[in-house]
Amino acid sequence: MARPLFSLSKLSGGSSAALPVLMYHRVLPEIDPLQEGILTSRVMDTQFRTLARWFKVLPMDEAAAMLAEGRLPPRAVAITFDDGYRDNHDIALPLLQRHGLSATFYVSSGFLNGGIMFHDALVETVRHAPTGALNLDVPDTPPLMVSDKASRVAALDQLIRRLKYLDADKRNALSERLLDRLGKNAPDHLMMDDEHVSALDRAGMSIGGHTMQHLILSRLDATTAWNEIVGNAQALSQLTRKPITSFAYPNGKPGTDYNGEHVDMVKRAGFGNAVSTRSGIGLKDAPRFELPRFVLNETTELGILMRMLRMTAYPVGASAAVKPAVGTLEQSTSAS
Ligand SMILES: [Zn+2]
Image 1 (tube, rainbow, N blue to C red):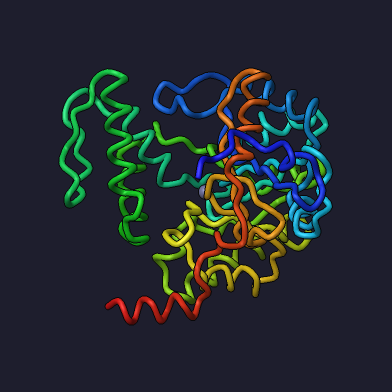
Image 2: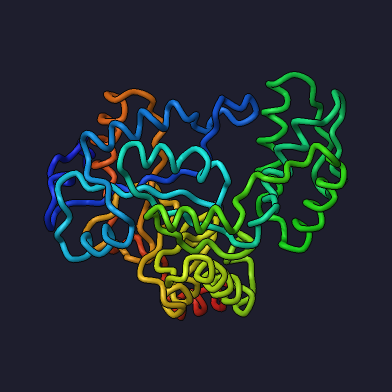
């Protein structure tokens, strides 16, 4: 069956409406040549201005509740930021305030106060590698030639794809080795400090859970996964003095990065809703603990409006839920 180009009813509020949830990570003052996909503050300003003019931006908790109850206002949207980068506080917060918008920030508490995520250790390693063969001394990862910008972008892409699913221990060890090698080139304030989290909260923004170490939940044993989820909520709750009510799965791909067991854990831990990285917009019956999101890259008002319309052709309903925990267990036993 042909997919409709768009469906206005999905943005018209009420019980047939769907909820677009925007997913951001970082925002930079200027384009980073190695990470051109990261928005600049200028583009984010345009996006937020457009959202403020045409849409009703709601806090995630409110949006998720209204969606489930079939009472979303027309053109409802929620804004989310993942990981806890300091630029969220320094650049995104003033932009949100300028346009009178609110957002939810999913923070991995283990990196607060000077930590660095594995991804960024890789980025900086590739950025500062001298021209020639870059060898990370990792099994099955051959040396890569780096020289100009294009070769570095390609090398980074390769490394991220090869190392994303490395075991937690190996990943931490490699990260430490890379930071050692970077020496004074290792960034020390990429992520927020405790104070930035509190400041976001005081400014009326929401703080959400994203685990402590940003490890892929499906790769962890149940106890570690549970501790990652709950320890993070406790740490953030101490900073905001509020319960942490929304959760984002690290990496967020349903069935790959998390499964039914983790959805159950998030519910049991006391969260009220959660988001994945499945691309789409959630319908009224979408799984409340796996709401889809999407990345908005458009840079002009018209482009942004067209994209929001186009996303109505990608509704996500009840069938999107990952298999329940028990079913997943049975399946993995019978498959082995
Ligand atoms: Zn993340």
